[in-house]
Image (cartoon, rainbow, N blue to C red):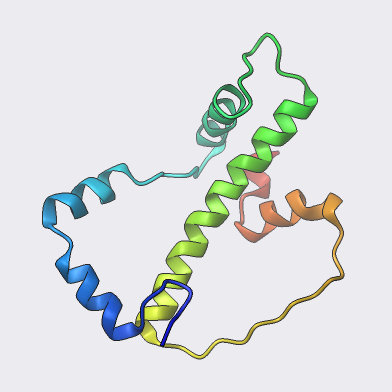
Amino acid sequence: KRTATGFGAGEIKSVEASIPEPQREAWARNQPKGFANKDDFQREVVRHVETPRARSMFNCDETAAYSATGLTFRDRLITQWNKTQQRQTLTDAKRVYYLSLEFLMGRALDNAMLNVGMKDIAK
């Protein structure tokens, strides 16, 4: 039976056991840390301004800053999403899927900040 992670509960455990220990340690050591406070958040935003946006402190406009903020929260959401999918696969929990076409894109960043519980840090 296929799942969002590509493996069933039994399969994912055997795949996890087959990963060499040095590779596991390197993966754990180098996983993105995200942000837990205002300084970490600012560091991540600056990284996203400079790298994907190819801007610097001298040519960072509001659009680049907004985009970098969105990318910072996107990274956090993706990390949490991956952990949730792995946990759901390991526990073989039932899932309910809901698709709604009613949404407001202008509020997407605000909703993302609320969903990861970091809106106060981003302010």
